[in-house]
Length: 403
Image (cartoon, rainbow, N blue to C red):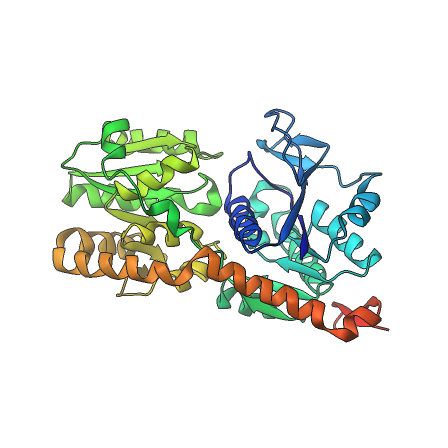
């Protein structure tokens, strides 16, 4: 099978979407399939040329210079798709390149699959003008794009429920991004202590992710401040960077805990696994995640998780089994952390179960499920003999039908 992936972000940029694409692509290739990536260039980073990766001219995004906005045009795209002989197109964005992929799928009569990675309406704070209006516009764009697809992949059942609430009527399937368990076979449980001057006696609370408003890290900082009052021998390690980093550093100084908060910046993939292994607890306050892949990674090293009960994390954490889910309140989040720090029996039980549960979401298993979805679409004889024709239903939603 030849799979065309259209995405607004790809390496060297780091994100959950990029990680998902990399994992699925690696597993698809191992299963004997061919994957071709259509993504942005990063003019400031000069990514090397890679076989099977086709990059579009891009410009840095003013709000986040590390991110690039691809120009969705190429005079060679049609010839490239024809020469590759793609069987299916999988979009990972409802915007620039995602829409380009959708047009290509329609033109060449290929099945169109879309993974709904992101609760896009939760990111409109990056567009400070008319935020409320922007939220409705973004929901409309996402809904209409989903309804053009032959299949929408959601990382959790709660996301499927969300899609139904905003009017998505296209077929959906719940397939999370799996965890590459092989990465966690040889890890250094003292890596943070040796590389970031973390004291061996300190209990390490770990967060991995973008330091942006949508990740709710200010909430985490306030909860950690409360934890510090009872457990001064704790340390918060934040792996990643983002637009809130300077604010978070300033906040830690104002709270008097700057010497207890470690900012590592962005780390190479091969060292992030050591961060998990050398921490004691994974803390995840985000309320905008469609999955929370980092939660699965943390569990792969036996880390119990404390997370806010919302969307993806609510399904990634089995409450009172491999972690604790809390209401989105600082006292509840703080109490959950303290419960695991002071109850060794509870901690050990959840640590063992976290490792065990992580084995159930391997990247190979999730990739096999995705290939099964592709194959079902390709095996639909009716699909091969009919041309997709979008139309609007009575509710005004865009629906894909066939002639």
